[in-house]
Image (cartoon, rainbow, N blue to C red):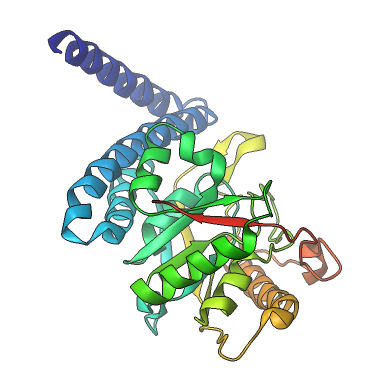
Length: 304
């Protein structure tokens, strides 16, 4: 045990020294900041995931398991902001983030969205993720323990029953769900939205809970992986008014998906113009005729 702790100490000291060295080098070679902030981000994510595992284990017996994800998000925000000097400024004057239960939808750009979650993730809410994440060390353990909902798009046979289970969980425990409806990161330099997948909308309609859109300005001026750009800065986020699903059925999901995407796209362009100080044409963000993904099979599994 002592030997392991000794190796861990050497690793952490070496990792910190390497990160600091790249930060110092960035004053001479600007692209070194990309490496420095990437190193800082990864170690912060590991620390946050470890914190989340412990928090989930401690809070589960007390009945506050769903608070573990919120606490972990805030912990990650603190350490990540301190090491990268990147801040997501959330505009939520009506306090919609405190609504419960609800389905929260946010646009998905890069891995930096994990920090965005640190600023916007509400209490008593579960995250969603690909089924493969369950097997990821640290992060997957934390997600499973904190009650995450895993999406298995390769298996649609039990979609209806698992959707019912998730909807019942939302209603019975007043548990909110946080979803990236694009299903994957866009990595776009411009304010675009990929076609929306309909799973989150079906879930909101089935549970009869409101949809609360969260729009994050395109931040390619702060993180642009292809250009090895990663610098400090502030990124605006706006929480839109809830969209009611009361009385809606599965037949309404396509239209609900389309109108929600259009609403978020309009706000995304406005926020990005504010953040980057340049104008964008609405047509830039057109990725499909109606912006709705044609794939319909989705299996939502609530973590035990």
